[in-house]
Image 1 (cartoon, helix red, strand yellow):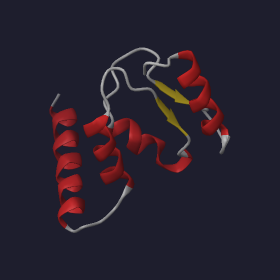
Image 2 (cartoon, one colour):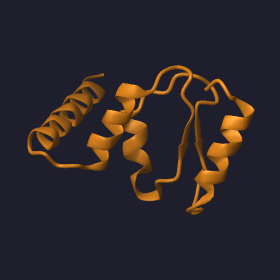
Image 3 (cartoon, helix red, strand yellow):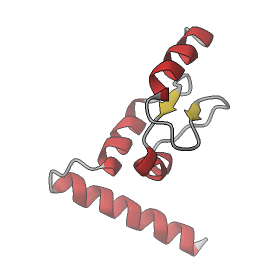
Length: 91
């Protein structure tokens, strides 16, 4: 548990440092996204190199709230987002 707590503390401090310095990083963007998502939000991700950062910072608790291509497939997210909205118009 200490390792996980230390990791969370380091992540929080790094994010704070980036915000204080005015840096716009994938961590800052992902944390900002986390502030606006709720349990009805569906996230369709097409980030490739920053996927892990998004997963670290955005809290998604509902089954079916996160979709990713799972591999190299840039550009698929636009169509996937439209499909998600059609499947769940209230989300």
